[in-house]
Length: 352
Ligand code: NAD
Image (tube, rainbow, N blue to C red; front, side):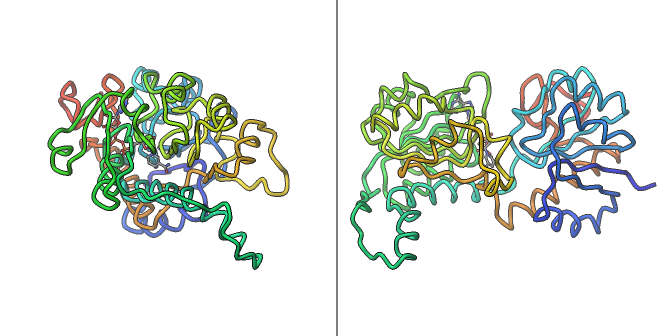
């Protein structure tokens, strides 16, 4: 019998990829364009597995319900898993798998796109020229060459960003990561340091760490206070890394010169949806959108053809491994927050 899978928060653009790859897997997939939360979890009753994305809520209530429907696998079509109560999943013996790497290049390249667009005001120039206004007043930028970039988090994505900035633009790159990779830093000539030096010396600060209780509001009033006047802040990781209210305060007093945001603390309600005829009631987001030096994209850094192919293939393989009793190499271990393969505590290829 075909295994029945329910996809939450699924959009037309990804369904095409899943349907194409599923020809080789043969799952019976139903797609819903609604978020998983405690009011929608009932829809999963009768399925063998569920597949979720960044805004689906996998809290204790939802996980308890999934367990009561005898669902033992959740596959995340993303890398981040800050929306999952991993401890509760583990207590319920629900396996949580993800797509750890689908295209770090996609996110890194979008990061650089935000830097270049903000610096050279491409988003404003496009509109001005469209209106046949060829005046360049107000579009003055700066050379990236020899400026200093601070990269916070040097995993898969942060490393590519650091390489592009160092080797492509010949910037000075300072990096911070609690697990520094000195082979990497020595190979391209960047320097690991602490957050204070990054805050004090960087012209551009870009975030590439996961959202955890340690990194929540890693950029806050105290950190903005230490930064150079006119600093550019880029966040393509998770909204909760920045205290948005403080960001607005420091944009208002011109301490922060630019902000490029692909993510936002309260993005769940809005990102990926069309509010162009309804408007929004989030005053913080509305205020951010009024700044000429803030460029917001709607969590689209991952959005390339290559990334969607990898997401579809890896997600379906994750389900296949589970249903065939194979080791779950992309399972997240709640004890260490690592893929199972990096977690020495588990022996059998599965957390339980
Ligand atoms: P990764 O796991 O390869 O790297 C994360 C790095 O952050 C690791 O080196 C880790 O040691 C480091 N880190 C952990 N705690 C830290 C701290 N307190 N300070 C500084 N660094 C810390 O992850 P990745 O694939 O590079 O992805 C980074 C983040 O990008 C993800 O967590 C996810 O939230 C985000 N992401 C966003 C999109 C998007 O479309 N906008 C897509 C994919 C991933």
